[in-house]
Length: 167
Image (cartoon, rainbow, N blue to C red; front, side):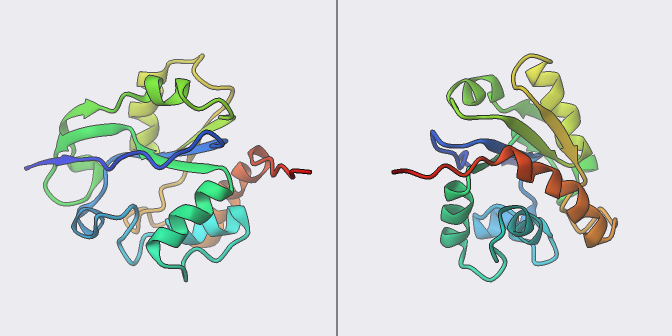
C-alpha cells in the first residue's frame, strides 16, 4: 500500500514552511492536510497566526495560512505504510525539499511537525538550506503531550512571521 503526499501549499511570500511526514489515513481519505478530527495542527497554527483556523472550511484555512506567510508540505513524497503512524513508514521516497526551498525567496524557517519529519527532513536538507530549522512536537493525536505544552513550542514560529504592510 504505497501512499503519496499532497502538493505543497506555498507561494512566493511563504516565510515559514511546516513539514509533516506523510498524510495519515483520514487526511488521504479527505484529500486535506491534517484532516483527522483529533489532530491539533489547525488549533496550533491558528494560535501562531492569531486566527481561528479550526472553525474555517478547509479552503479558507489554506488561504488564511498562506496569507499569514505559512506554507505546508511533507518530507516524504511516497512510502509504504499500513495505518497512519509514522513508525509504520517503510521504503520512503523523499520529497524534493531542496528544490522547494530554493523556490521560496522569503523563507526564514522550516518547522518539522514531529520527530520523524525532522529526522528525514534534516537528513535531506543538510545544514545550510535555511536560516533556521525547528523541530516541533507532533500535532498528531498519537503524540500525547498536552495541547498547552505543544502550543508553547509552536508559538516559537510567531517571530519568524513578518507581517508586511503595503503603502
